[in-house]
Image (cartoon, rainbow, N blue to C red):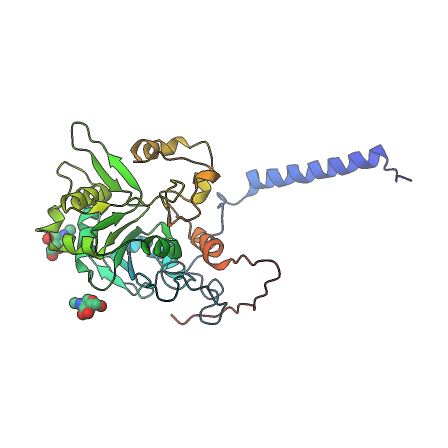
Length: 337
Ligand SMILES: *[C@@H]1O[C@H](CO)[C@@H](O)[C@H](O)[C@H]1NC(C)=O
Ligand SMILES: *[C@@H]1O[C@H](CO)[C@@H](O)[C@H](O)[C@H]1NC(C)=O
């Protein structure tokens, strides 16, 4: 026997559901105190709970086969004091130091020290117009023999460090190389310059950095016309110093250094905001899930602190276990900072 539900009882449920939805809608529109945030924002740097397996966690697979050498990388994050609380400290807590798979040598380039960031290279250049001066100042203060590669990132970049190591393992730091997302600057009547997107981050080999440091007046090694774009200046300077721009696309021709977060690039119909990228990209820039490399090194425009932890969790913490595999639990630990 099929149980009979009377029509009137069914309608009663529909009315109740519709009423609840309407009430919720009216509450959110009329009574919500202020503009709702799309995501909760931590007031301060979340600690402890978000840092998994510091010391006592799962064994990670070694990144390199025994006998092959892991490249030494220094990561320099360009920031300013106004973004210490909202960005830089969350980088430190995730890919920049404390998280799984973090870049072990991360320094911050800014103009005041900070107790939490600790490794701050001080530059007196402060405004955005001075970005080129500041970045060169930072590069000049680095020890070119202390690492094989020097990565520049912004304070709204997420670096997937294991994938950077994977890319660099195939390259020779004694060559003068410059890596990132290649764009082409085409000024009207001026010289065309290939440069790497600043936001998506770029990497100099130690030989490229040595050339920059040895250049006569490095701050003047810049695009001769007027531009405030630090990345265009770097592109010009690298070419002037005979540094080769290497192709960093994966085997399917997909870029590894990305100027936007994954959730924006997954939309197959590019947003009009991205017209510049389509226009400037050296290689045809494609959108949609099949165009996102599974070897991505950076995402840019990560601006909500929660998103750093979100990507960190999906990329470096979450594990894919094959059927039948077992693993010990990971204990949370409160790090001493
Ligand atoms: C920063 O210092 C350098 C050298 O000490 C100087 O040439 C430059 O003008 C200074 N920049 C600013 C913005 O004060
Ligand atoms: C630069 O790094 C090299 C290699 O780690 C080290 O031997 C050297 O002392 C460093 N130089 C300075 C000035 O710190």
